Structures are given as structure tokens and as C-alpha cells.
Image (cartoon, rainbow over all chains, first blue to last red; front, side, top):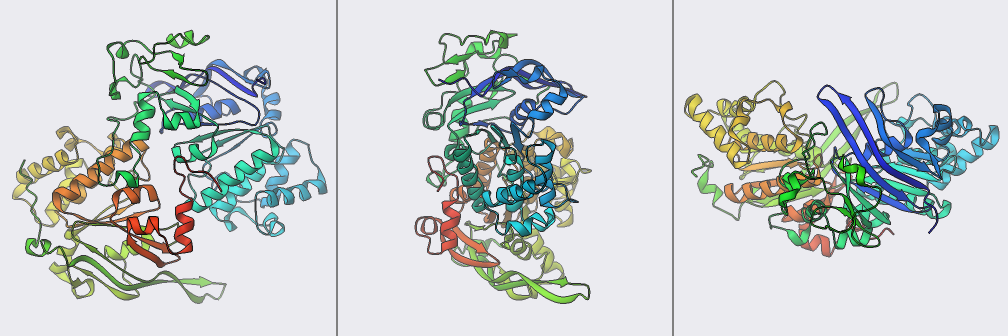
Length: 334
Length: 282
């Protein structure tokens, strides 16, 4: 296997809050191959967005900070870089798109200016070539009449069109890794399908890797090669997409899939995960899922389960699967 | 348990063939001003829509943003007057109601909104939120009886009795949505408009709220108009579905018919776009 493009190891991102120390991301490890798409799924407050912001080193300071861990991109630990060095990676090698295309664009500049700005900041394309490249980027993201859009302002575009512009900006410098944080949540379902298809096609053409953050298992099924399920700041299960959806291991993953409404379940009571995700300032002791778990063992409220290799492609953090421990994960016990 | 919940107009309620709600050829136009001189033009948000729902059933209205489903919902609640057409509740047109008759309508028709963070008054305790409607509609014999009713409502939505003295900010999104549902039930309605009631909720909380809505519908024989863009939720909860596009209903019928045999291109596109587990992008 090739060396991974991105390797995150034991990442902990904490926040000082009035309610106490919030361990938003608490020991997350995963890796991503070139050209691969990994989805991080989880409910609000599980730490999936903060994981992406940590990779970009855009965690809101001073409240938030990276406590420990490594984020190795193309063999280099991003956490060792200076602010200036990181700045040259951000937007050039790693780009990010967000959920809200309404608020991510600057309302007082034209679309053309904002796409050119992304390129000029990184000096890759200049002058006239920047404008023509902006035009071809807009064509590439399926924008009708790109020449006109270059002169338009964000408010003149619909949500789907703005998200296309955001993707064009993110791709301006041909990044090797795209972080997409709920890129279609604010969009209508037909537009969502267009954007997801676009992302997949662009990825196929450019060979970039993608980290997709979502709460929608249907989207995961359509787009991702593999999935990490996050709960309470940790990854509880990692698996190839098809295996995860057909044969989930962790009781939390099983519960999430079982609680989805569908036509075949009409009129029947849906499975429910009792309770709510606990606040990140007060994670429960032991397994963080134990008080909501239907398969709880005695050990679960006192001892945190380690990430365990279930087979060649899957790992799970749950006492129901007491196999040999994955190397390098001992520190999660702390 | 005894519910303390007795419906209005019981004799009418048992007549299951007559529609509870009937929307007849309703349109709504909004004036839009264009240009400096303000030439007046009209935008047709809802265009000649007809539908009806029977007692104890759920009709879903689906469509994308701007399709007119929220405008339709506001008219059904009598919060917005149609430009043309007529809406009837239990056979009686809205337009013929006034005074106490209108107040009775307000009591019969309740609503649960999408965003439980915005739909509860932050300054009212849960007790006040649950009893306010009872006071207005003269339900219950004095404060003690209303308190008893409020406690029963909390039991129905599976919230503990301590909830009464708390404020909305102390609760999670799912708990707030339960409070909003209890508030809707507090005046013993026959009909509830559900406007995207689970869109703001996490998956695990969504299933709790959906279960609750089904349970309450069976218990109180409630009629639901369910506005949603989530077709998976619609196919789970609704009996019938109406598909809206640009203010018009392009197709309506039983969920199975529409989902299995859509006749309109737009319905096709909408169904094809649902990211289902096991489906693939085209």
C-alpha cells in the first residue's frame, strides 16, 4: 500500500469553556490514502467538525487548542509547522468547504474577484491567466454562463450556485486533500445530488483525497470508500462503507442505522437510542456510550474500550469485541 | 391513565369519511415591487391547490425550498388569507367563522415548527407555556386542574414532572421539540400542522420524536398535515403525499403509489435524488 496522504494519530483538541474543559476531540486516529474518500459521521457535538478544523489548524483560539497528537500530511507533521508555513498549505494543498454557502462568501466582492484572490494568494496563477482559470473553474463546477457569474455578487446566486462557487474556490489551487464539512446540508435534495455527483467527478479527474463530514448515512453510502463513526470525541468504529452499513459492529452504529425512518418501517415503532449525546465537558467514565447502550457489560462504566482490530479492514472500540489491541492506542486509556 | 383529554365535537370526529381539513382551489399571490418606480407585479406562491385529509390520517406535503409548502401551511392555520379559494375545517369554511367560532378553530388547529430553539418563548417556564393556551381557551377548573393537565401532557411526551419549573434553554433540541408538542396538545386539538418537526434534530433524536408523533396520533386520533422535504421521513410517517413544485401540486396520492409509480418527471427527480443506503449517484 502507498504511504497515506494524511495520517492523524491520537489527536486531542480541547476547549476552555465557562463550563470547564471541553474535550471536543479526544484521541482520534485515522489515515487517508491518495484518491480515497473517507466519511466521518456522527451527531452534533461528536467532534467531527473540530477534527476537520484541527487538520486545517483553524481551531478557534485562544479557547481551543490542540492538546496532543500528530497530523501527518504527505509525511510532514502539520503541527510542527509555523503559521506562515501552514498558511501556504491551507487553500493550496488542503482546502475546505463548509455547510453554509451563504456565509462563506464575502458579500462585497464579485465571484470572479474571490476566485482570483484564492489563486493570487498562493501565487500559482497571475493576471489574465487567473481570470481565464477562474472562468474554466466555474465551467468545471457546472456553472451556467460563467462569464456572467464572474461579475456577479454572492447575493445574486442561489444556494446551490454559491456552493458551486465555494467548490471552485476550494479547487482553485488543485489541492490534494479536500475537507468537506456537511457540504450539502443546506441544499435541496435535487441540488444535493448534483453537488455530490460533481464532487465525485472532480475527485476522479484530479485524484485528490476527500474527507467528508456528514450526519447522513445515505450520503455516506453514495460517496465514501470508508467511514469513521464518531461519538463523544472519539472514533468508535472504522470500516469500509459497505461493510459498515450492512454489518455494523458498534452498538452506537447499529442503533443509528436501526433508528432511520423508511417506508418499510411505516407504522412501526422505530428503534431509539435512549438519552442524548453528553456534553463534552462531562464525558461519562468508561465507555462514553455505556449509559445509552443496550448491550452494556459490567466493565463498560469503568473502563474505556480500546480501538481493536476486528479484521483486516475494520476496527471498533467496544468491550463486546475483546480482540488484541491495536498498536499505538494505549494512550487512549489515560 | 385517564387523559383528561376529551376532544371537541366528538360526534363529528367519529365520522371517519368526512375530511377534517379540506383545501379547495386555494391560491396566494404576494405583491412584488420591481424597479425604482415600483411597478406592481405578483408572485404566485401557491397556485390553485386542492387537498383533503381524513380523520386520524397524515398527509405530507413535500417539495423543495420555494415550492410554496410553508405558505400553504400558514393559510391552513388561518394565519394568512388566501387570495382565492377556500379552506374548510370539519366542513365549515374559515371565511364564515368569526368571534368565538374563530377562537374554537384556533384551539382545534395547532402547529409544531421546525426549530424548537425559536418556537418556545424563552421567558416562560414550561408550566406557563403549557397552561397559557388552556387559560385562553378556558380549559380546566382553576390553576390546580391546569397543573394536573400539564403534568399529564408531560407524561404523554415522556418528560419528567420537574420539567414544569424549568425554562426552554435548559433543554436539548429533542426535549424542546417534546415541549412544543405538549404545548400543541394542551388545548386538545384535532389537527396538528407539523412543519419540518425533525429537520433540526439528530438522527437518534429524530426517531424518538417520530415515535412520539405516531403514538399521540393513535391515542388521540389526531389528523396531521406534515410539511417536509425529507422523503424518507415522509414515507415512514404519512398515509398520503402531495408533491409541490412552484406553488402547484403536481401529483398526489397514497405514499406507496407515489413512491412506486410516480407519473410526473419532477416527482421522479425528487425520489431519485434521495441518498438512500445502498443507492448510488448517477
